[in-house]
Amino acid sequence: MSLQKPISIKIFLAILSCFAWFALIPQFYIIIKNNQEPWYESVIRYFSYFTLLTNAMVAVCCSALLVAPNSSWGRFFARTGTATAIAVYIAIVGLIYNTILRGLRPLNGLQKILNEVQHVIVPMLFVLYWCVFVNKSSLRWKDFLPWLWYPFIYLLFVLIRGSFSDFYPYPFINIGGLGLRQTLINAALMGVLFIVMSLAFIGIGKLWSRKK
Image 1 (cartoon, one colour):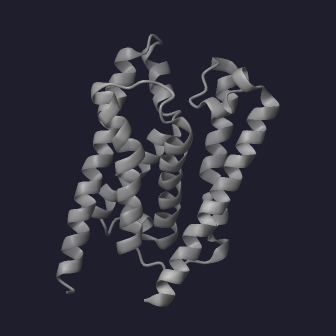
Image 2: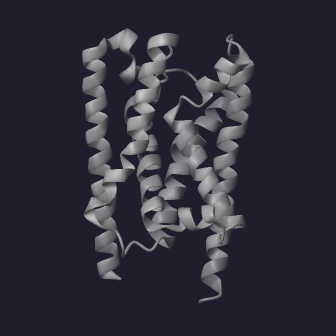
């Protein structure tokens, strides 16, 4: 059993890494090719999507754990807190898309496939990885506090840059379309969602560890 577990983790990480990188690389090409903006603006817009940033986080995490588990990056991503934070982020990616954003714009061909990988397959696989392979016994209720920095900094970046470029990647944080007040209300609700989801993952992790 002790020999099989590392092999199963490696196989799972290899599959997840392939899906995560597949979700990112063709999408980068599509955005660069289709945008009418200068190439540097297209690159910035690519990295302005929480979905793509979080899928990139998953891709780097799984690749580091797979090919360099003893490196500083590998040790960082192997931490229970780090893995749980990423699980929260990518779960929210899937939740928000499938409850709010799905169907807002028609997708065809490769873009439709990439969309499903980014918002369904990668979130499901990484949460499954967290459930099966991550040791959750060290999770504490206060661990969620530093996890909020990523969505907070992301929101500041999008809102500040959007005020200059008039580009907002998501309709619920579009100051131009909604106004500042409604956008801040939506941002606050998103903050509550991050806190609730974080506490839910911590609670599930603690309960899971207790049962084991």
